Image (cartoon, rainbow, N blue to C red; front, side, top):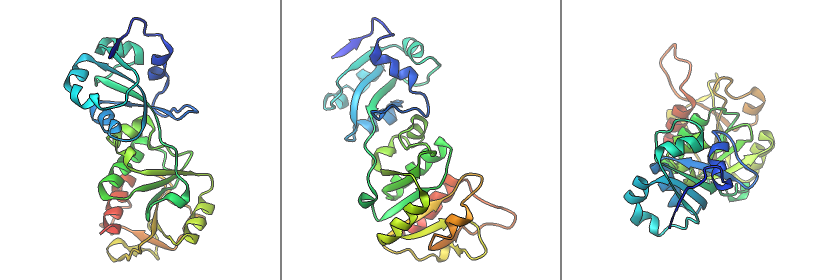
Length: 256
C-alpha cells in the first residue's frame, strides 16, 4: 500500500535529505536514486527500509514491485520530492536501504581489485561497474576511498555495486602481505622501468590488481611489496589513462 505524505518532516523522510553523496550512518543506511539503480538494488538481497517515489514510478513498475519486500512505500510528486531532498532532482524515485556487511579477506573471490587511495566516487562507481561486467567479484579499499554504496558511486555503477563483495582494510601493506600468504599474486598498475607490458602479463588463478591514486599513483613502498608491476602500452608522450579506464583495460586482460 502506498503511503501518502501529509508531513514532509517526519523522521522516515529526513534521511533522504541528510544522507548526501558520501554519507553513511552507523547502521549502514544508504540512499539510492533513479529507477535503473533502485530497481537493480531491489533485485539483490539488500535490506530495504523505504521508498520515496511518484505515482508514475509505482504505476510503471507495479508488477515488478509486488514481489519485493518494501516495508514503506511513500507516494510523492517531483515538486514535493525536491522539497524533501533539498535540491533539484531529475528522477522520480529514491530508496533507503542497508548496505551489505563488508566481507573478510578469507571470503574474497580469486580475482580481487585493490583500490589504493582513490578519492573520486565517480571513479569508484565506474570501476565497480566494470568489475561487474568483467566478472571481477571482489573490491578491497581503505576508509578514505568512497564506499561502493556511496550515493554517487552507486549511481555511477548503475547499481552494480550489489554484484561485488567489498572489504575495507585499515593497513594496505598488511593487507597485501596477508593476501600473498593466502596464495594471491599481487600486481601493481603503474608506469615503471621494470614493469611488464599488459599484453605480455601472465595471470595466475588467484590475483590482486592494485590501482593507485588518481594523481599520485602507487607509492614506492607499496610497489616494493607487490609481486609484479604492470603497465598499459601507450603512445609516446601520453603518461596515463584515467584510473577507471585503466582498471577496465587491465581487468579485461586479466580475465581473458
